[in-house]
Amino acid sequence: MLWVKAFHIIAMTAWFAGLFYLPRLFVYHADLPKIDQAGHDRFCTMERRLFWGIMTPNAIITLLLGVGLVHMMGYSFSAPPLWLSLKLSVVSLVIIYHLYCGILLKKFKQGANTRSALYYRIFNELSIVMFSAIVLFVVLKPH
Image 1: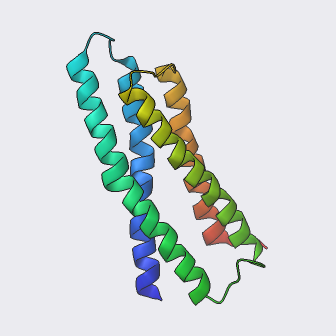
Image 2: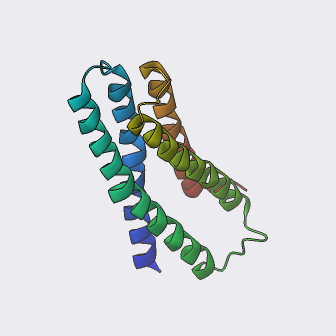
């Protein structure tokens, strides 16, 4: 079980690294002058590779290993302890955040972004808040 937990943490760390960085790329992309096609193409490539090459595979690994850990630890999804319910609630928000990043990625690629760099600066902080909540729930295990 320790190996599963270790790889769950490794995959989660890689996933969140992408969740911290992709919105930062969106900040810079949103600040780019409209006439800079080369810059736009470069950001689209970086964003796509990060989302599909790092974030999404590690999200899938994290979630699969997490389900495995829940079963290995003898917890039930129908009646989990409070800390696990709280963690899984935040994980659900992280999944929504991840999927929304994919929508934003597509909008940038199509040249249809309507949000400011400030919006993405604020949006970027949400991943840190969710990460912090998950760590606190897992470490402190509130009852």
